[in-house]
Amino acid sequence: MAFVAVEGIDGSGKSTVIQLLAKLLPKVYVTKEPSDGPVGRLIKEWALKGGSVDPHVDALLFAADRIEHYKREVEPKIREGYLVISERYVESSIAYQGAAGVPIDFIKYINKLVPRPDLTVILDVDPEVAEARIRRRGHVEKYEYVQFLRRVREIYLTRAAEEGHPVVDASRSPEEVAADVAEIIHRSVIEPRGRQSLG
Ligand SMILES: Nc1ncnc2c1ncn2[C@@H]1O[C@H](COP(=O)(O)OP(=O)(O)OP(=O)(O)O)[C@@H](O)[C@H]1O
Ligand SMILES: [Mg+2]
Image (tube, rainbow, N blue to C red; front, side, top):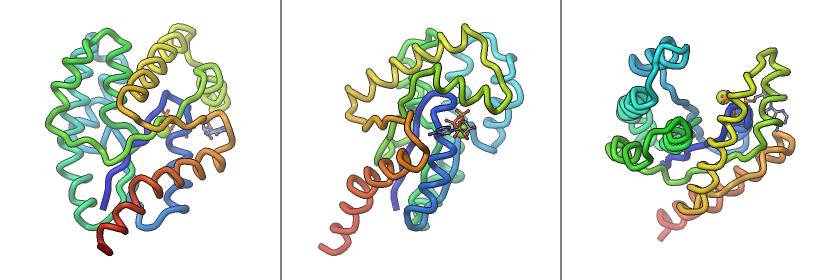
C-alpha cells in the first residue's frame, strides 16, 4: 500500500512509537534496519560492535543491507497491501555516516538503488533526553557519543527542512508522539490513496 520511514537519534522513541502506530492504523507491517538478512546481521554482529574502522565501510554495508531488505521484505509487503513502517532508512545513513565524516553526496549515490519512502517522519529530541532514556534501560553512553548524536540530530533537521520531512517533537509522552505521527500518516499517505481508489 505505502511505505513510511520513522527516523531519529538513538533513544528518540522510534521502536516505542512504531509499536503504538501498529495499534492506531490499519494493516501495518513493522520492520527495521539493520535487517535480519545476511548483511544486516553482519552490521549488527560486527560493524556496530566496533569491528568496522571506517565509516565509508559502514555506509556501504548499510546501503547493501537496505537494498537486500527492500527487495526481500519491504517491497513484497507493500504489494500485499500493507502500510510498511520501517524503523530507520536512508536518512539514518545520511545523518549517522554523514556525522562520522562520509560525504553526503557519496551516501546519496550508493542509496540510489532503493526508492524514496512515501513519507519520512523525524522524531526529534535533545540527545541528553534520549541518553537519559537509554540510561534508564541500564546502558550508559559515552560523553563523546552524546556529542556525536548532536551532529546526527543537526543533519536530520537540516535535511528535514530541505526535503520537507515532518519533524515531530518526541520529548512528549509516547502516546502524544504516536498520535501526531498517526495523524501525519493519515493525512499524507492514507487519505490521498483512499481518494485515488475512489476516483
Ligand atoms: N516518549 C517517551 N517518553 C519517555 N520515555 C520513552 C519515550 N519513548 C521511548 N521511551 C523509552 O526510551 C527508551 C528508548 O526508546 P526506544 O527504544 O523506543 O527508542 P529508539 O528510538 O527505538 O532507540 P534505538 O535507536 O536504540 O532503536 C525505551 O526504554 C523507551 O521505553
Ligand atoms: Mg529502536
